[in-house]
Length: 481
Ligand SMILES: Cc1cc2nc3c(=O)[nH]c(=O)nc-3n(C[C@H](O)[C@H](O)[C@H](O)COP(=O)(O)OP(=O)(O)OC[C@H]3O[C@@H](n4cnc5c(N)ncnc54)[C@H](O)[C@@H]3O)c2cc1C
Image 1 (cartoon, rainbow, N blue to C red):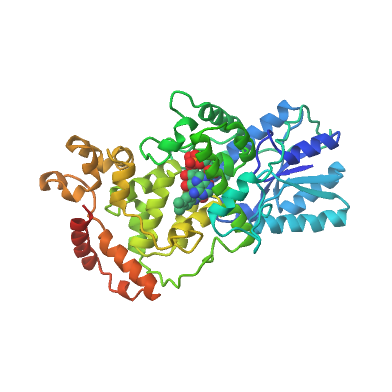
Image 2: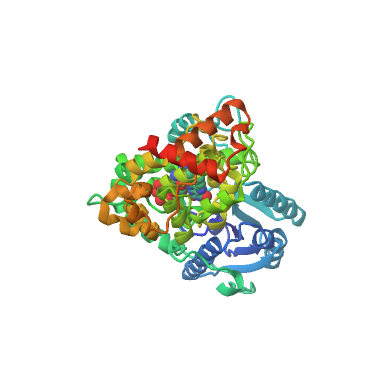
């Protein structure tokens, strides 16, 4: 039996390849795990992508001669019941790093041992497994660059062959995937990407082929160009395993674009090995900075709604709502704004991203939020992203902002970059825009953040009334130009 979790593909699937190579019959099982369905994982965007991916997986398995067996309930109970019924000698699965995944594997190991079924865990979720490369003085790398050096030198496992043919035991009932409306009650983001291995591989084929200055060929130069949208957008396909990160490293070829892309896959592995070593990462500071975060529901609500008054921040938040995905540069800017300009707890931001991101991934979301908040693995933990400077560098014509913030779309007539500082527009134009004043002045907010960090207290923040913030915005605007 192969227990699928978030490795929803048939290509380069070491667990599936091992089972197919060893046994005459293979039971490919997916369990809708009540513990996960009842948790905050179960958000519409990810459930939709998951369902697409399972439909695809079932079709691929049928093409190979088998089918996806589907159950619902406790994952260990269901896996054992199906394995016992089918007379399986072994259960194969892809090993994973979260606290939940590890508990699941440990429980499965206990149940398998009682039932005298072998449990075999395989690589596949990352390029290099967590713990495969370690520093001399610990169980994981705390800093990216030395990890990257070792990771690049590490020999990679061979890419697993897709099984030529699979056979399901006759007596195994396949069960059925749930109806979409029974699984997903709330609306998804309107421009959500479709899930599935076929779609992922189609996109990967086109992007990796590059040529003519597109795809991976452009990646090195254009990955930060917000309007250019020149990153791969593979993240949900990687999260659900529709694409194999190991196979991508093999297929990407050489050159500056390929190197830069592989480096990003290494960041993914980096955060996975941190989560494996620190399972509390999604909740606990990796490095405490003694922050006494402000609490302000109105500020949080304005950030979530994309109504901060900083067009670049707001464009990122609107992209997240519209697509269930956000460009990496915008993730950095919006997360820095929440944690440093507003000095609100990174966990609040991570929870909102988690609600909407189709690629929402415990290791990457928590690892990156902590990196930006300065409680994680950044070697410059107190850096503050200036939204105006970021706009100047990465959206100089304002095309990204106009794409996602319709209230500002008309500003184009006045010239590209003007859209980033609507407060400077002529009063007669400004008054026609339904767009808020900046909620804080960036310079003042950044200074207050640094003071709070250096003093280990947030005293300078406690008097942050709307009036003070408006005054600050006025001062900040002068200095930010
Ligand atoms: C605050 C914040 C939260 C984030 N939350 C998530 C998340 O929940 N899930 C997620 O997959 N990524 C997350 N990221 C990382 C990154 O933003 C996305 O992986 C990337 O934007 C996805 O777009 P892409 O596939 O086009 O990336 P590309 O630039 O094409 O990169 C290729 C792949 O490399 C990996 N990758 C790229 N950047 C990073 C990174 N900084 N850390 C880890 N892996 C990376 C992703 O798997 C990505 O698909 C977060 C970043 C920030 C700053």
